[in-house]
Length: 495
Image (cartoon, rainbow, N blue to C red):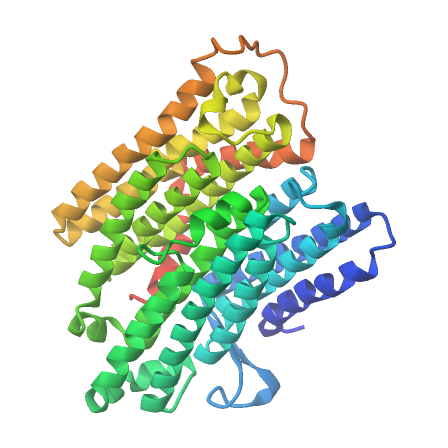
């Protein structure tokens, strides 16, 4: 077996598991969970080997059926695609282990199999998006991801989940069509959909058909902005978070919207290039959107009484941080954005899964009901607190390194106003995260709880939470462990 075939094998493994689950419905569901975990372990091993290979040996491509990349389908494995598929499978495994313990929070038992079918198709589509080197094939995988995400949001048979799913599918179909229209305009101007070939001919096309290229960029940024919940295209996100199971919310916030941001990076840097972006003043537009998201996302989060809606608006603000790093169009900016994608993935997964355990055990999601929660659910609230302090940017957490890197990148570009916005946004984070921690650990008059033992919830729920807490602190203490891989990923776009 050649190394070039490993990406295809990863997709086949996900597809195989998705097709196998319905055939196992007469078997004990534990068998399905074990087989799914084995498939994920195989993909993790494969992804780890690919990450090592592209960093030590070099990038490589694979064209299906021996056709030229111009006419066929090409997968391109770079330090960028290898790193983020590796990160996705790690986060997905943590969420998968947790989901096997909480009975997927409110989903009827008859729907368990369908939930995991959707999860594996979701993973297949995200890996495909990062592997493919073709704009139209990216669209195909985006459509699969959108439909699957809609199904995962609406899997609980409740009116609010159907409403949220309908809003999600309407907004995301607008985003998909907008992206596809941009692809059509690029094909019209260059004659290619292969990203490498478009990149080589985009300057000539821009000189000959400037209007086409400008409109194509606008449509693609808007389309991906809707899917990544970039402010002001975020309106579907809080409802989707609040109505979906906590595991689905974690997947949506920690992984799915990040994949769309990674597609945006590929479009901006590999398709259009920095020169064209600067001629169109795209950095300024993205900077304004990021600054607005960082402030207003946090302000909306403060007003929420439902903790899952609060976390949803928090994600809108955090997307602003990532977009800020991307919009600087610099090595340090992109490095900060990539680090924050990983850091926020860990922290937001920890937050949603912690809240999921509280909902599982105490059947509450109101912020005001967190009085003394740290005494009866020390693991869930302890990990929630670590992740929340990381979101604030406290030292010794990965969130501090994220904001430090963003601050350095902003100063390098002499954008002092955005350093001020970064600080204000962090202070707003304090306003809505710190009171929850204080309620949980320092205010206990309402119930007079005593910490006697850890919460009586399944170990498969507690273990992933502890692991996430350790990873958040470890990444804050030893960021240089992963930084070389992030820098290699940045060099895919900026050398």
